[in-house]
Structure formats: C-alpha cells, structure tokens
Amino acid sequence: MALKLVTRAQWGARAYRTPNGATPYSGRRRGIKLHYLGTPYTDRTHARCDDYVRQIQAQHMDGNGWSDIGYSFAVCTHGYVYEGRGLRRRNSANGNTTLNNQDYAILLLVGSSGLTKPTEAQLDGARDAIDYVRREGPAGSWLGGHRDGYATACPGDAVYQWAKAGAPRPVSEEDDMPSKEELYDGVMRYDGKMLSPWGTPDNPTWMAESVIERTAQGVHTLEQAVPKLAGQVGALAAIVAKLAEGGGLTAAEIQAAAEAGARAALDRLGDALTEGN
Ligand SMILES: [Zn+2]
Ligand SMILES: [Zn+2]
Image (cartoon, rainbow, N blue to C red):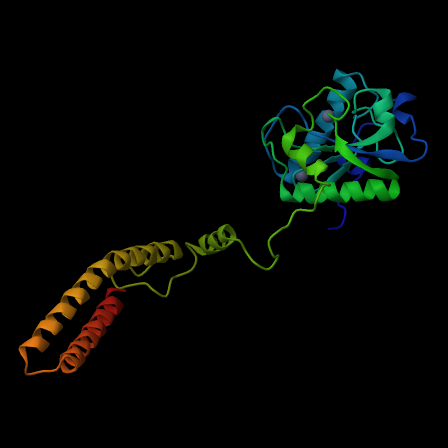
C-alpha cells in the first residue's frame, strides 16, 4: 500500500511553539515506539478524523502545556498517517527527553476501551508509517511500545503484540472476492428497486430479501423431509425382500417396478415445487 500521508496543513494543525516545538533530531534514531490513546475511543467516519487529531493537539498544547502534538505521526482506523512532529522534530510522547530522543513515536487511534483493536486498514497504515520513518527519518530497526522502559499500559496489548511480532502487514481478503457481508449488502441495496423474476401471481412484487427468505425456508423444509424419506426407503426395501421370498417375482423385477414408481413420484414433486414458486 502506498503511504496515505496527511500533512499538517491538510489536517489544519496549529503552529507549534518555539523554541521547544522546533527541537530537531540530529542523526539516526534507534527505532520507533508505538502508542495508543489510553482513553475510551469509538470508531468514526474518516471525515471526523481530522477533528480528532486537532483535538489531541489542543489537549497536548493547552492541557499538558506542550509545544505541539506529542507524537511524530498518528494513524487513524482508515489507514491515514497524520503528520505530527514529523521526521525532523523531536517528539514529546515517550515519557522523558532521553526516550523522546531515542525513538520516534507513532500513535494508533485505538482506545483503552471501545475500539481496542486496530483495524486492518490501520495496521496497513501503521506499517506504511514505520517503513516511511525508517527510510526517511531515518529510524533504526528497533520497534516496541511506549511501555518499553517506561511505566505505562500504552500502547495496549493488541498494538504491543503486533509491534513485538515485527508489525506484519495484515493478510487481507482478495480484493476481487467480496465478503459474505458485502454480497449480502449488495443484494439488499437492490431491494425495493429490483423486481425479482420469482414473483408469483399472489405476490408479484417479491424482492431479493423475500427470495432469500423463501429459499432458506425451502432448504429447511427439504432438510426435514430427507430423514422421513430415508425411513420410507428402508421400509420399502424390507417389503421388496418379503415379496421376493413369497415367489412369483424376482427381487430385481420388484426393484425395477419400485424405481419406476419413485421416478414418477419425483417428477410430480418437481412439478409441485415449480407451481409453488
Ligand atoms: Zn503512549
Ligand atoms: Zn480516518
């Protein structure tokens, strides 16, 4: 995936305070520490993510008295990577100046309650951000969480385990293979617009949902009918054996007659089902 970077200008960042907000990194960092919000968080539409990042910045600047948003970058659940202090300025999120100087700080917008597990898009975006910071920062290969070397639950177990596994890119479903949910949504979107070809005289406006329901009922009915039929076939086999013992006809002859009858019955069943639809 290509990095989906949202620059400070694009998310409407406030200007950082100087001189502290301008403290530069000099040279290569050891690596990257991941963070989470540590507060309740619920997912939202991407249109509201800018707002949320501005809110974090305001909290850091006005609440904590910092010179800027603390993180180097922040990744929303839709995989967008928000530029915080960026590649060249020292972050203030890792706990103290030594730690801030040692590693970059990347926040994933997940909470300590509500949305606690990163989304696939978010892991993809975080992976992009890690690659970007390693390539352009540059950051060394060390990867961990805020909790490494500092007393905090951050970045939560889900993000921490992912970091310690080396931040693997999530394995997503084939792009051209819609999920069951997507298929269902696709069908339902047409409901109310598409006249089903299965409409009947008494119900000419069946919609897709009705057809699915009807099909499900049909399958259920057949499932119940099969054991009954199996029982009848067993009984029939016993009768065939008895008749053969009585003489006159061979078992094979009786069997052939029974099969012909069964086929006729199946044809009638088929007709009935067609009429029923
Ligand atoms: Zn943290
Ligand atoms: Zn978003």
